[in-house]
Image (cartoon, rainbow, N blue to C red; front, top):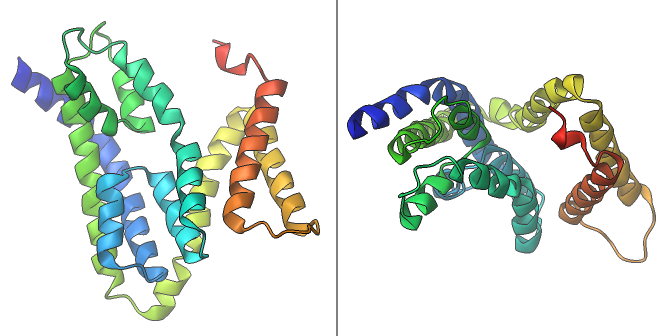
Length: 235
């Protein structure tokens, strides 16, 4: 039963893996574009395992952001993972040890949490989650390696053009959400307006790109929470 559950989790993760590989390849290519050492891109995928944060992190590194700006920005982007992990933990078998829960929490992403939350059974086997997370994690790292080593063989002109992939990816993620939700559209516009104000308004002290992203994200989120306090509770 345990082996079957693990195998079921791995099979359930195949669609996620198919979606992850091209994005991970793009991430690997981008690390070459901004001339990061190969090991750094590999370590980021192994230890961070968060697509949006890795893309933003690479961009911040490329523009010379400080360590604190990078850490704080990625923390804000990944904060939702606390909520995802907390939600999934309520459905995992009760006798699961805290050590196992800690390991499983590392593999929780938007996609794996969605697949797990849609399971029909009341309690989710930790073996199923481990298989699901392992498939997603493996595919992301394989894609990263492929992107890094493919990028090494590409002409400089093509490597340079890959920089636009970062913006294309976020636009691709944002547009479907905007089409489905007016609050997301308004909050996104708020973040853009706040960032523009910080960029164009003369100030006695300079605000770096990293801090503009942090301030814009926090302020837009706070305003969005005030304007749409019950949006997340609607069925």
